[in-house]
Structure formats: structure tokens, C-alpha cells
Amino acid sequence: MSVLVSFHAHPDDEVFSTGGVMRAAADAGHRVVLVTATDGAVGEFPEGILDEGEALADRRRTELEESAKILGVHRLVMLGYADSGMAGTAENANPLAFTNIDVEEAARRLADVLLEERADVVTIYDSNGGYGHPDHIQVHHVGRRAAEIADTPYVYESVVNRDHMQKLIRSNPKWTEEDASLDLSTIGLPDADITTEVDVSDYMTAKRAAMVAHATQIGDFGPFLGMTQDELRAAFGLEWFRRVRGVDGPRERSLPL
Image (tube, rainbow, N blue to C red):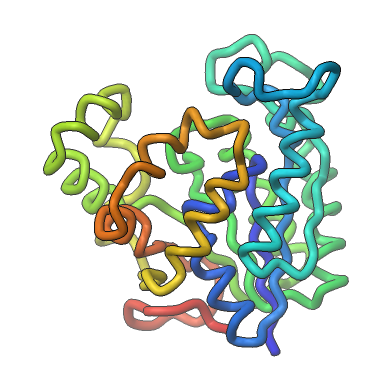
């Protein structure tokens, strides 16, 4: 049995880029650990969805716990840092926000988990956090340092395949209109920089169910939940990674578990 630790910024981030590999690893008999950095308290949510007096962070914790069950997670760790918000928002200035936390401090907390679990593989984000979100960028720095401290054998950056994303969006007028704010020239990494492409199409039922579990974020997920099975597979049936620590080799079709 191997141990996979997947490190993410907010509740719901786990679904899109690593939900398939997590479920696949669990089904293959490996131990899966999910670590989230922030409470997600700054996320947008539909009006009226929270109970009277209920905090968004509390609801998102419950949603994350349900998603984790669906994806086969054996242990869920929430580091509990404050959500930094999108780049350029007022929340960026909060001294307690994850983006402003000392990297060494946060890395040692994550390293403790890696060491306790004797992790074989940890997934993080690339240096731009996929699309420039401050918390995602901090996950990159904290994750890289934690893996150094714990001497984790394999480190993989979970990435968006820029070429695939460009082709997918530009081939569908509906998505082009909805995603016009995306800078397709900078999001993710070009295909040539990707070392690992995992086909997770057999796990789309679990990925979609995990999306549904994050009900407060349904405004973001809505367009995806309306997609056909073929559209879901085209958009989320592959998960991509760049290996930054481990044995070099040809393009991989799975993580080393």
C-alpha cells in the first residue's frame, strides 16, 4: 500500500484536478489523505442557502467532509488558515490570510502530516497556482517546502493543461462566453511541460457527486452539472501533473502508487 497526500487551497478544489486520482488510488487499496489550507470563508454562495446564523466556513467544512467520503479519502486535515480571497481583493491584506502566513511555519505543519503518514506522493499546485489565486500560489510554496522537510519521495504539481483548455473552450461557443474572463495564454501549463496525464474517465460519477456535495459553490459548478456525460469526460476525464521530485522518465499515465 502506498500513501497519497493531496494538498489543496480551499474546500472544493480537491474535486476538479485530483478527484479522479484520489478515487482511483483508494479503489486500488492505497491510503488517501486530503489536506486543505483554508476555511473557504470568502467564497461566494447563493443567497438563502445558509441556515440562520450559520457561517459559510462551517457549511463548507461539512461539504468537504461529504466530498472526501465520495472520493475515498481516509483522512481529512484542515489547516484552518483564513481564506485570502481572489487576487486584488481586500482580503489579501488580512495578516491571518494564508497568503501572508510564513511559509516555513505552514510547511512544518504540512510536513508533520507527510511524516505521520509516511507519504509516498504529495500533490500541490504549480508556481502560478493554476490561475494566479494567492492561496493556490501559497500552496505551491508551502507544499514544496514541506516535501523537502519530510523528504517525500514524489512531488507532483496538479496543473491545468493549457492547450487542452484552449481547444475545449474555443470549440464550444457557450463556454467561450461564460469563460471570457479567463486569460487562456497564461492559465495552467502548456502540454509540453506536463509529465503525467491520468485518464480518470471511469471515475466521473464520483467526481460529479463530489461537485454536487459542495452545494454552497453551486454557482460556480452550475454550468458543469448541466453537461452531458460526454461533455464531463471531455472536460474532467483527464487529470494532469508535472513531476517536480522523483525519478525522471517518459510521460506517465499514472502517479507512482
